[in-house]
Image 1 (cartoon, rainbow, N blue to C red):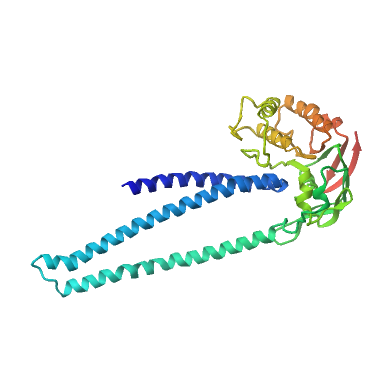
Image 2: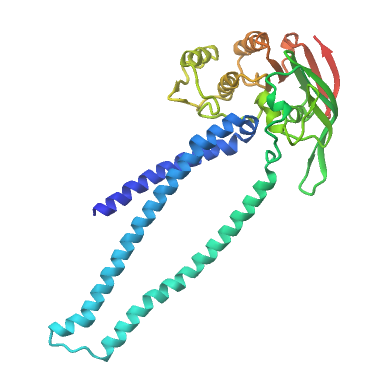
Amino acid sequence: MSNQRSINQNLRHFVEKETKFFDSLDHLLGGFKEIKMSRERSDDLFENYLKNISNLTKELKIQIEMQFVNNSLFAETFFYVLMASIIFLLPQISQTKPGVIVNITSVILFIIGPLGNVVEAIPFITKADMAIENLEQIESFLDGADDSKHTLPDSRINQKKSFEEIVLKDVVFRYADAHGQNAFAIGPIDLTIRAGEMLFIVGGNGSGKSTLLKTITGLYYPFTGSIRIDNSLVDMTNYAHYRKFFSAIFADFHLFDRLYGIKEVDQDKMEDLLAQMQLSAKTSFVDGEFTNLNLSTGQRKRIALISSYLEDREIFVFDEIAADQDPIFRKYLYEVFLKELQAQGKTIIAVTHDDRYFDVANRVLKMEYGKLMHVSEV
């Protein structure tokens, strides 16, 4: 009974750990773009959460399986001892003499168990081989998709703390359909982004604004053309270092429950930011995580703004961040929040349709059919 209670208790712990593991895995998959943008966030999520929870879950699983094996061994031993007692001991202590039927029965009973186990194990062995093969294929695919394996730690870009300009020259990016045919493309794009400026990008749905943002930030690799940061060419050897300049909130952003990658959070500063974002009554920041993320889309974007602000990167990229906001907060966002970021020397690139606030930006770029049609200085 005590062993069974121990198994039940360990199973409960296992379920709890497994649930936390899948929650963290959900953040990994849902927030892939944000994780790819920040090495610190990626390392924090993997080393301090996914890896630890995975190891604890594995240890619990092994412990539980060992307990099940011990129980099974005990049951098997008891069964065989009982059978041996009936077959060999009982005739010695009773008047009944064992006959041919008993001898045949005992042989069959001793043989049928192991043979049955072998036969029953064949489907499991086959499934295990197939699972291992599938895992090897997935591992091979992921190894091929790893864009950081060519990264050079001593890259010039890795040594830079700030920048003066980012130059896109003849940049083209194409999407392909399931048959490998070109579905949509942007470019060729020629654009210079200067440090400390506020740049707005406008255009209709499907014009390529979000694709341009993902190309600028290094999430998408140009098919042709080049990206340079202060005359340093951005390529496969330094894309991971290049992304460290950006903090991005895309239209399909993922909201994390914790500030992964940010080692220390000033609680007073966090409470001040929650108040500025008009979220103090909706959620709090306790023990390193937000207490409530069941919020409206606009409120979730404000949580993402707090996370982005605390990352303190050189360039802030916002894709329709003002959408889903009420008029009062929208006015605060453009006339206070973004201006304060720029006053700190930050560069801001924002996709927006709020022509009422175009005067806040230094430049407004318009995209149509994947091309920059014109640039207006404000």
